[in-house]
Image (cartoon, rainbow, N blue to C red; front, side):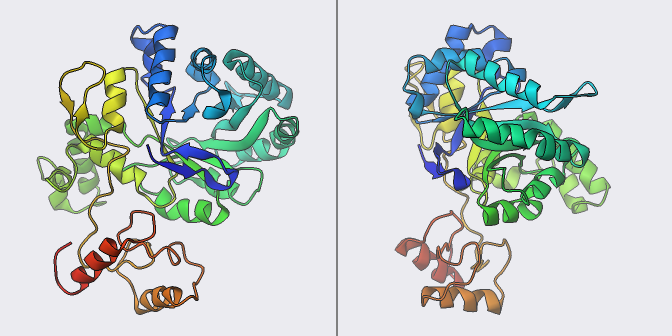
Length: 377
């Protein structure tokens, strides 16, 4: 497992987080018992996952509680949520605190590591969350029942991330849950530069949804985008428009490509995924082929969240990780940084030649300059 720090919270978290909601809900909708679902959580923790994301509306807090009974509480980071506005009714501070207390009761713990207001829309909902509920959340934080306060967006209606972009202006929020995937990339420009600047932790939802598991949905979506002039017309004419991602040095399948795309985006801390099956759990996390410890037979192909980043694009010379070819100013700033005078740029101090989010190795640097000299990546 790989780990990172969740923004300014200081929490050390696995880059893959177990989402306890969504369609899978730990297998409960498909006949799994709560005991079986709790064992699935244990299996995830045994694989190195230490972040569990749940919510009252998911109906899985009690399952998380079952799992927590037989593991050290400090070994996992638990995130849950509370609703702010539903069925034309505002939830009062007292009601939100009661929701928090009920979550703690169901999970059998005296604190939650990240407490998030759930699915907040821009405008009135955000103002109510900040001005009316914010003081109550800070009070619960002072009592030790909440370690860190966060917020999740409502991506269907707020697909430009207006709520979270606005929320970066207020210091109360330490963690955001963000929607981002291969066909919804607006956070790259609208949000991640702000969260990185403010050191707000990010947990990614929707990295992989059914659209990537059903090729016909990808084809239909890209044909529609081509017809609307949003992408090149030729892409809409392809039988497999994302087929270029599948090759020996790339991804094994579209699902893997989607996970890798999300995982290695600058500004992403944790990629949440859901599962209801032990074999699927292992497959989602596999880096290289390994024995199937669940069924004791077949080997599993390379898969998603822990797979390495895609190979760098030859000739891009992207010194400052902004996704485009470097300007003379970018290059000058980069070498000034190497000389000890780093400008305030996201990647200026990391010497990140290949976009994998860490300081370059000698091999990274050699490969980079071979590209500049006309060689291959």
